[in-house]
Image (cartoon, rainbow, N blue to C red):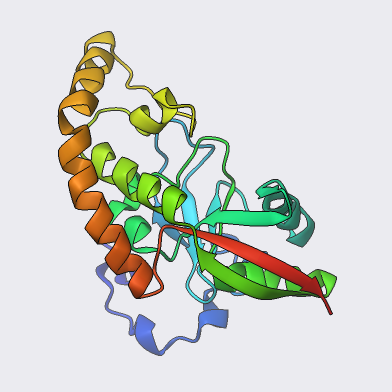
Length: 213
Ligand SMILES: [Zn+2]
């Protein structure tokens, strides 16, 4: 086993910039290197990396600022932009089972990563509010993902997310049953968890307002 793999080198004293390289491309939002977070999973375009500085998550190859801004703009509706918060409590407890990991998603935002990203086009984040309905739904689905073979089955059935069904037919049948049985207990757990998360500014969904500088 190489020295690097055994972790004998004192990685903690290496500045973040030293981690930059082909395997750690720069974060589109802040330029710091991205580090591996989640391995390739069914339904994802690639392994997921994250920025230790601003918290942005990137699925597959990281693009540039323009691509990340375009992805952010696609989350905008009716003058409000709502993100599934990668710095939220649900992402932390869910990991690969976090409901915010949707098949089409390439960039997994945090408020800080959005703040740094929109600064590139002279925009300022003027408001960041917890989004209760989407937040509780994300926490609920994240808990359900801990019980099912597939991902986001319940929100997918409700038309609120794109599901990643399990591979085998028997697993898909079982997932349907599990969602019905666990739905209410999971909701009873999700509500207080999400309320606590929101109280500590780590809610699962955040609505953002912007202003031009
Ligand atoms: Zn970053």
